Image (cartoon, rainbow, N blue to C red; front, top):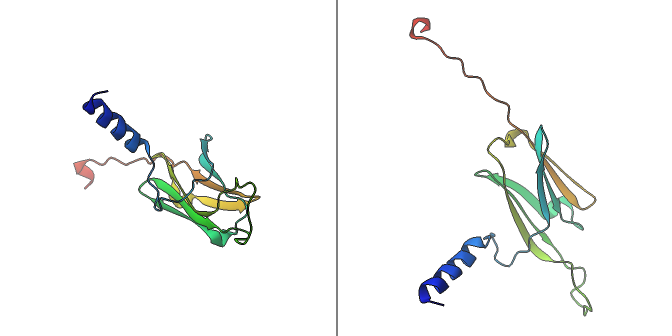
Length: 131
C-alpha cells in the first residue's frame, strides 16, 4: 500500500470517530425516531437517578452526559458487561425540531426526550403602500 493510501485510510478512520467530551466515556444505546408530530430520542441508562445525568442542547445537537457509579469497588468481577463511569451521547436533531417545546422523562431505565416538530410560520407580505 502506498504512503498516500495509508494516510487516506488513517484519515478516514479518524473522521468516523465521534469525539465525546471525555475520551474515556462510554456511549449508551440511543435511538432517534420520528412520528408525524415529533422526534423521539430514547437513551438506555438503567440504574441511575435523575441527578446522575444531564440533557443539554447546543447547535442542533442534543447531548446527554452522566456517570454510573460502580456497585462495589472491593470485589473481583468474574464477568463485567455493564459499563460504569462517565458516559456521553450526542444526537443531531433535524432543523424542524422545536427544542423550546421539548420534554423529557426517565422511567424504567430509559430516558425519553420528545421534541415536537416546528410548525410552519407564515410571513405576511406588505406592500410599500401599507407602510
